[in-house]
Image (tube, rainbow, N blue to C red; front, top):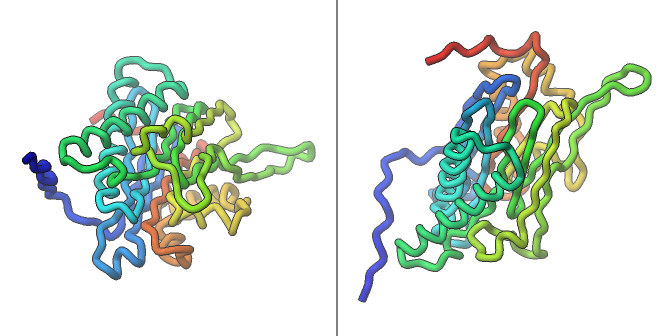
Length: 283
């Protein structure tokens, strides 16, 4: 009788919250991830995973929300993010173009990583079920894809006929959903449930990914909050790039949760030139 391989030993410490700010000109990136209230109160692990990487002048952000009803979903979300990160890093370093095909190939790498993990551990793949949402950004080019109920939105501003700035926050990539569940990248039929979008608009100044526990950042019920794109410029002016992430940490901390889920929020914001960080020096 074959026994499944034991779970790999992990030495990283379980987080209660993660905060970080990154700079990839012209984009200022903030990541905030917080243990969900129910998971925290019950000592359960965090099911969300996320990753941010970059090379060749591009960067990517990805969030995966492990399905809480499945016992190994947190391992699925971690495997999906790591595989996507490795694939995009190798492909872009090798000179690949930014395309929807490239991002979907990264999603396929995430799917195969979960299948491989399940096979090694002798478990059905659905036990690793997780959503996956990701964007690749380079200057004005933004490419996004999603499987499951995590959200992707973009903020924009432009001048109207009177010369006034008009701000908007709109959905960018909305994946189809079943009525009482969510589709996952672990599903063999994930290609039937994925959706992708792309833009080269210079008017987009914010790109946001939120797992369903953090969707209240840009949704008021089913309505998008239009004030965030306008608010961000004031926040970076007030706080500066080093502590810009505190804007989102404060929101996550004080916003009453809509549910008990873990909450992951990834925001890329393009500040005006005079508010941008200084040019990074080579390491």
